[in-house]
Length: 138
Image (cartoon, rainbow, N blue to C red; front, side, top):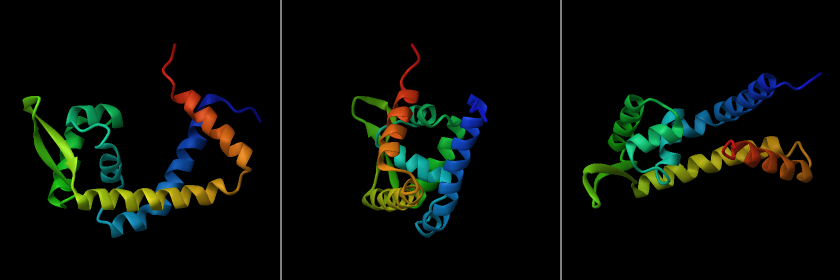
């Protein structure tokens, strides 16, 4: 059976979906929806709403909704950017950091459970392959 690009993409997507579904109970216990989790996990690296939308590849309007929900839950707050007073920067609260860390731990535990099925050398190779696929096209 040949592994064409569409089939590999589909298998990868199915794996990610299965792992996220397995973590949904833990996310719900933290008060997080799946997409809110992604925003929470990425906001430190991409603290501006437009940047966050571009990084996560979701519409700006959706980011606005998720941010509004996360602010209401006390997981993040908006701050005026000192370098550009017209911009708001998003910052995790202590509760947001704790929720993010617990959600990431649940995700890591579930993914590690699946990774345990393959040899350590294959994990290393998978990491190398994924990093290569994420490099910008030349």
